[in-house]
Image (cartoon, rainbow, N blue to C red; front, side, top):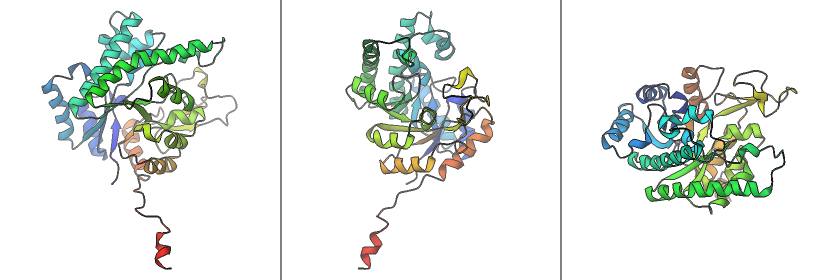
Length: 334
């Protein structure tokens, strides 16, 4: 059976959920991965039955479903250090409050707990998001960083996220962390250590997004097989590498998205270097049957053209695996 295709609404938060649903339905999407952002979802209204009915009603009117919701922006603030002007721009006034850093972290954690409750109210089993990291600032490891500082960073993550994950367990919902630079898990080894830090508890898994792996030089296909039991959700975004330009590196030189001087950039799915066919075959091999969510980002392309094109590009690879080995027919002739 083909997997459902959804549109992640995070990059569409300037529109109402009704408007995004109308577009997605017209383009042929099966549903939405709805972000707790803009007008789309409010995690603090998780126990408002009329509000839940209104959100689900929008989907129903447009023939769409929801398999996952996301809360990347507030999740970022749970562990981050420092908390500063960047967070004020993304977490909203309720979580920001007076801006005192620890207060921001605590309110962000409360919103993530409410997001699990909201998911349950919506009939959704997966929440996608970020964790933040108190040690990302040390990624260059210079000036020298003692081992105990890194150890403390993973302990800080466990201390802050285990109580959140307790609520996820109570709600029967899983958290799918997007492996991403600036998070506690951003590559293979940091993902292994993150899972170890929380005792590999089942409430915490991964959102596979190959775009961030590609520019770091990580094999996105191998990552699927390495973490087969932890791939809880899939976001599809593409990356075009331009490392042949010897002036540019993977850190992008503080240049904005879309600048041709960058060593890489996000592009519409199918227009970059992600090995989509191999990736989809690997997802099929591990038995992933959840949604394929298009996270559309391309600074050089209009989103109203890019989002439907990305859907068409990815659907080509959503092939049902064979029900028997291809060489089984040979034994019939013996």
